[in-house]
Image 1 (cartoon, rainbow, N blue to C red):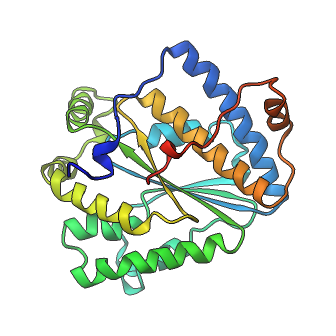
Image 2 (cartoon, rainbow, N blue to C red; image 1 turned 90 degrees about the vertical axis):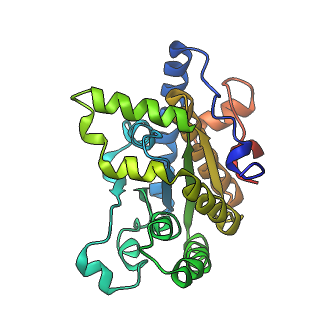
Length: 270
């Protein structure tokens, strides 16, 4: 779609150097760790939804987000197809059961958005079901953000050529071959159908309380840093809105003693 959300994203954005990446990575990880402690103390729940193309780098981003956090305070939920017993319930039931308790951070590696993406494209949900799901998802997320939850939704976008390059790299590397499946290749053949589903998803579920953040991911290093920056900004904004004191780095940043950043609008789907 020439005028769609994804068409406006410059996936070629990149970090200048590996040394600059390493320096910023440590800084952002330290900030997130400091924020995690406040999330725990203030009993705030954080839900991070990670969606994107196959091989777009979600796993690598999740690793950098979590690698220095207190492991007692976060959980990662990899989401696959529903198990037989889960199909006996409303599709959102299995996600309710995985929500974080207050004071915890939970990352969903794939999520309830499968209803309007893979289930729509592959015909696992009827048109009536996936059409109805937009309102169901918006209501679900509104219930959470009205009750001490922060929701960050991330979509990792890469070019079709970059995806092909990564697929071939996985096939040719014995240590990565497990990451590529026949299903990945089948999904790639339906690129256009998935783009259409993604555009509808952004249009119908990008809400002020739960915005989509499209992450330019041809450069994995850039994508990891941007993910951390957006998460930090989301938590900072929540704390400021609720008059909760932020970590010391924030006030040093305001005084010009450390480098800061803002959650600019180009971080968010418009």
